[in-house]
Length: 317
Image (tube, rainbow, N blue to C red; front, side, top):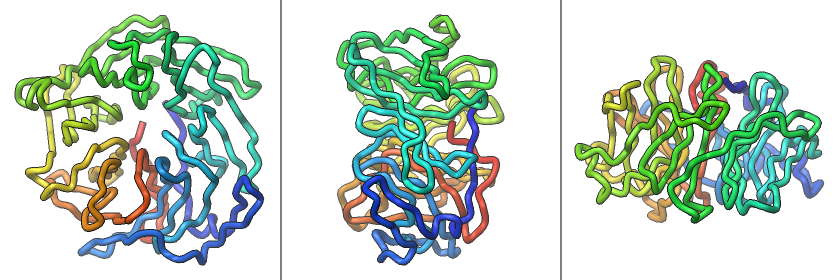
């Protein structure tokens, strides 16, 4: 399991970016949050920017560069996958932990801080693998992966470690979420090309897979433009697609299940300025919150606060 932190937005009033420049909480809004019930979130964005966006939709903290994955940690630092590195930034902008992609591989995607203090990363390329890196930068665990293609970029997406020590890994072109043991054995496969989801013609590539407290697995299917919750046997327990949300899905990548049962979904491929880059839906598939921005593409999201209160006990990994 992985640690997470819910932070009050006021703690992000003033931070230092890696360039040394100060990022003030009084920046102008970079997007718009819409909600009929007045919901406002602060959240970490990884994607076209690497930043924390406040409940007023202004940037509270930012470092240069595009990123793939990230979390705000229990110590207040920010852990991100950026420039094929795993980096942990302190509040004053210093890089306090770094792991660089092994030259044998081509991409570093996943980055997660584990409960034991190790940092989990996934490398894609000729030697696809999960690594657990110690705080000293040593490889503690190496798990070989079995992707369905030699195309490094399409091998895997956001992997997460399970409470039992196994790993949940989405394989896009395999149309499958695979559960790996520590030795690299595939113990379970959740197919995403089920006929009821449109089969392979539906391009239901799994991107983010999150095991929930119930044992179900929440999966965003990118080109398929769906979010599906599978039961432990791999059957569809719940799904939502563009028929239910008036076309808001556009290449859904990141997501988060909130403690109230709502699901936040990133539409990374959204280019229509009138449609949201991220949105929140209830179990009944009602849209209750949206974030619109002309420029910001959200790859992954970590919701931190809602209407000034810390978001606790949520699932994103």
